[in-house]
Image 1 (cartoon, rainbow, N blue to C red):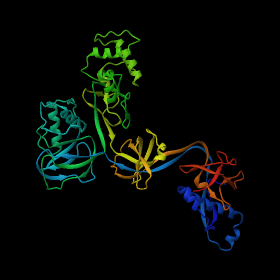
Image 2: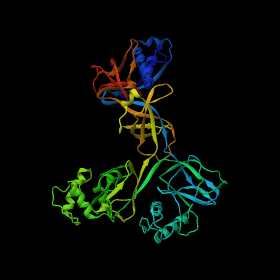
Image 3: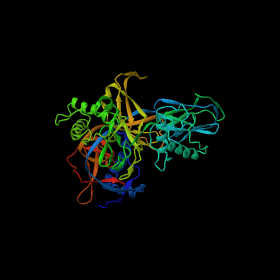
Length: 518
């Protein structure tokens, strides 16, 4: 029998009831119906010449073969969920005027995008935790200056790498602002006037905006938004040659090696560890007193293998004690006491952009990574009796209404039951989105796909090879040694997974060729 052949089948075999099949295996109806036609065709091979001779209409069905296999199967379970954004926020005007331009509802805005225009002056979105509250100009200092510099550097307005991203507005900052103003068609003053920028935690989706032509006053809304994610920038604490920078899309946690700097790992320390552990705090604080670091190492018992004198002199004995601490906390044991080899990071963030390249030089105070954490989440109401179907940290998939599939992780399982309209007590399972796609994601109903039962080393056949027998049960057509198809019962059907089904029979073995429709 060739790999692909053509055989004659009766066009309309006697009707077979598949109602039970539809109830139990709704995803396999097509495969079973095609298989049933194959069964009738197989039977007709033994005696359909009369039907063909008496004028019965026939169709041609192209057949091929597929092997019996040994596979690990997972029976996925689908749950109905609801995708929502983070808490809504309002971007407010910091200057009076008339709305001369606005963003359409549903628009996703990122760093550098225009939210609205007031008296034809654009209000530009920047990322930062502190709201804009003043004019910013040469000589000013503060966290808002640091945020301004970081944003404009990452937008590419410091091509000559002259700006050190810190909390001081310098002449280089002013020159960078002028380049930014030129790109917007504004007067190049080098100063940032109150009302020309608005800060948000990260990318946002506009849900409501004022009408063009309407009057606006300080404190009134120029846009109601929902945050898609929170963004934060990591800055280089030292200068040197970069090696092996972390790829985009990677989770950053305590112990993550971000990059090498002159041959020494630069590692992440989560904020929670820095707050709880004085050694982590002293290692990452450029204003620390070395005596405090040494005293903390000795007090915590990390200097038990060396003679560490608490004298403020950081030496090889200090390095040994630090390496012991690093090992205990999941960091690579470099022994480094240089603060620029440690970067404090928030928990639950991934790298969304990298500004480093292998073997390139990096300067102090330059952006090295942008980190992001989606604020979008999915809630799934689960019957109390089924709450053990989910485990915190378990990977799942989220199928959107437009059929895109996102990867997610079970973030929380509720403890308080709620009674829904059907009076079935449920708990809420919260799913976090691992990474946002490039295109906007719409809030609304979704399907959460979680792994159900698992069978390792199962004997499986393609579901399209199944045929339904008149006497009941299911079989497959096995290509015999002489090339003829032979019907073989597959016994009870077990777990289904991705077009395959587990079978229980000693009449099949891995590698047997089965007849399947092409």
